[in-house]
Image (cartoon, rainbow, N blue to C red):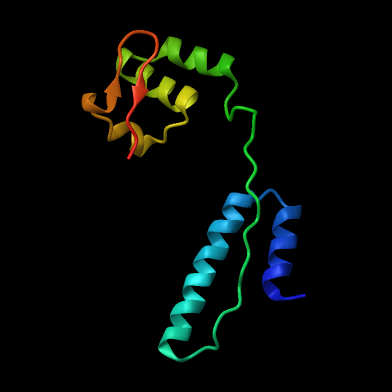
Amino acid sequence: MSAARSYVSSSQRSTVSNKTINNRLSVLSTLLRYAFDLGIAPEPKLRFHIKATSADVPAVPMDDVRKLVAEATLFYQAAIMLAAEAGLRVGEIRGLQWSDVRGRGPIAALRGE
């Protein structure tokens, strides 16, 4: 068994997500390809892609989100709801502009890039 296969097996038995494993293997593959391009390593034969699974369980229970929203100022309420309901990350929320929002009222769509 190769070192990469051993890494994947041990990572899958731990709490590391498949997406994280894929990200790490991608970095390793890039480094090996770079070493090959410099002529200091053989051509890499690393070809892995672990199927990432999506969790149906929210990271934070909605009851906790509601409590957090109830205690937050209006400015933070919107950010908390975007993170909890739409899955946006902090950088994505901070980068939003009104031109990214289509529609008004209880339902709005965000324009992605």
